[in-house]
Every structure is written in structure tokens, then in C-alpha cells.
Image (cartoon, rainbow, N blue to C red; front, side, top):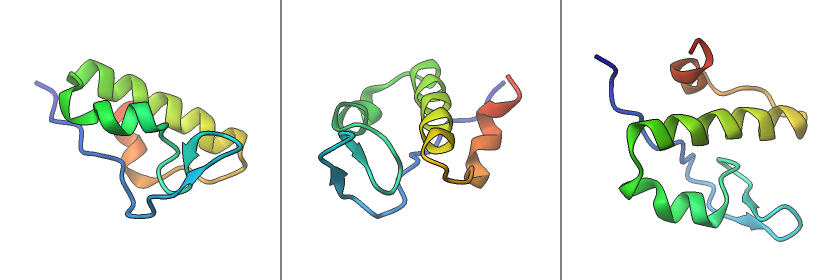
Length: 71
């Protein structure tokens, strides 16, 4: 059985107007607002999108990305 996926929030809650993503977690406002109601599958899909966004921006992966990187 898989474990619950925690929020990727880093406490740096500022939305970049150019990219419409948070400077800290790289989620969009829609993803942030929908997180509490998202299923585990939706949360894992969001994390996979965050991995791609961070890499595209030249940012390093975060430790909790290991939760979804091997699927």
C-alpha cells in the first residue's frame, strides 16, 4: 500500500506572474487550491509536473520527489 503524499509547500508562497507558479513549490494557484481535495493519484501527477517544471527552470530536485520518481 502506498503512503499519503504530503504537500510540496516549502513556505515560500509567492506566485511568479510570468509563469503563474509559486517560487517555492512550483505549483500553480489551481494546483495549490486543489491539493486538499486531490486524490493520491492526482497528487502524484502534480508532483511529477513539479519535477519537470523545476528541472526546466534549472532548479535541483527536492528530496520528497523520490516518492514519485520511481513509478
